Amino acid sequence: MKLDSMYQEVILDHYKHPHGRGLRDGDAEVHHVNPTCGDEITLRVKYDGETIADVSYEGQGCSISQASASVLNELLVGKELSQAQRIQDAFLELMQSKGQLEPDDAMEEVLEDAVAFAGVSKYPARVKCALLSWMAWKDATAKALSEGKTA
Amino acid sequence: MTDARQGLTGLLDTEAIRKDFPILDRTVHDGKKVVYLDSAATSQKPRQVLDALNAYYERHNANVHRGVYTIAEEATALYEGARDKVAAFINAPSRDEVIFTKNASESLNLVANMLGWADEPYRVDRDTEIVTTEMEHHSNIVPWQLLAQRTGAKLKWFGITDDGRLDLSNIDEIITEKTKIVSFTLVSNILGTVNPVEQIIRRAQQVGALVCIDASQAAPHMVLDVQALQADFVAFTGHKMVGPTGIGVLWGRQELLEDLPPFLGGGEMIETVSMHSSTYAPAPHKFEAGTPPIAQAVGLGAAVDYLTSIGMEKIHSHEKAITEYALKRLLEVPDLRIIGPTTAEDRGAAISFTLGDIHPHDVGQVLDEQGVAVRVGHHCARPVCLRYGIPATTRASFYLYSTPAEVDALVDGLEHVRNFFG
Image (cartoon, rainbow over the protein chains, first blue to last red):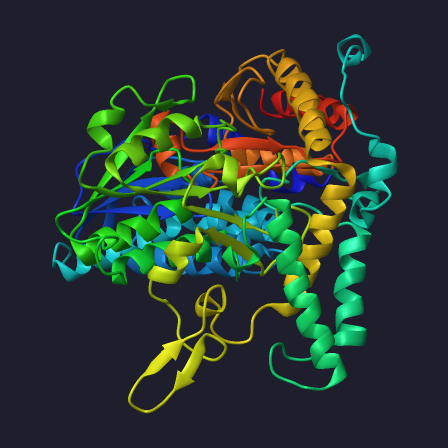
């Protein structure tokens, strides 16, 4: 069934057992909403020099948006900023592929669990759900950088 | 399920009606028949309306109120004929009280702007108050917020009770001598509630406030009689009442339309123009600047003919029966919570609900896979979601072509949703 391409086991697993959920101390906080559906996320980033020490979040939304935030936390915490930006770019490319992009080994290595979202890119109405936390992270990082909280 | 369907009375001959709506024969996702349960967002269109649009463009297209040639006169007659049809449909005392707009939002914005620019006694300013409700669609909230921000007027609200009704317990404190305008929805697009117009209007008239009614979810579904309503303005849109998109209506009492200033300026709305100043055409033209949505108005005229040929009372009875059946069946679904009235009394045919912790987006996605089209989200009524502490709802809404079998398809689909995320 086509639905299974969107709701991969990995995604449902992250949805039911989210990683790193809850707000903790951070350098910057943002609140993003998806006005078409009311999904919301509050997200904080904490940097230790160039290293992402923590990404904490709280929000409400569909399985796709919640699972995506969980995957983001799992993937980015502990990474260097430059590497995290490469992961973000790859995820964005995948989500904007309209289902046309078959992730290769190189992409899978970068995105790990996040490749499971490839199927979501076929559903235009849901791409924003998947990207909500990633856009919030990007925004929070820019805010932390501009406030000089990172080295 | 057949047991539950027995005893349903007042249903229309949907088999015949559905033949008029080509889209209802469509399939999606490998041959699944579309079960269209989103008529509160927009209705489907019968062949009669589509034919009227085509005939207009193929045979009568010209600009209105200008040309002296044959087809221009035909176009004008069709456009103005549509106004006559709408006036009769809502029992307007005069055809000149029917203003064509592009949708209900524009109609409501037009009222807000008329009052913002008006002279006394209508003028909304810092010493006056505007009243609306927590139940409104954003299109009946934001124009008033803008007006309040621009004039300094105070915006006041009626709240909602736990069971989805307007809380009018403090009506005398909400509507006061300072109130200039009370604007509220006749039927809620998210809760389905039909509001008690009489009580609100009586209080507004006591204090001399104008009343504007958003009838977007009423005009398609019940007899709409602007004289019986006794409001000052009534707004609705064509595309929810089997008409095309791009055409809406504002009805206003004639003396008000004469007194109140225009909002948009341009061609068509003037009497004379000089470089020094202009004078305006009488209503409704004063409020219809520029080339109007001609084909869309003609399409709305055909939609009104279509609804009238079936009969608004019969449509209302049909929807009431479907709504009763749907409420009954939905309440059988485990973990399902109806947001809004749980009986069909004083209720329209839009039913919002939540299903356990499953987010409406996920509900809608799995339903779509089975061909069932519902709306998910906050339905442009975010204050209602905040009121009930929920991020969003799933909404199923019914119309004259909806069948009990489609209710069953929804309920079966929800079972599937529960299994999928269980």
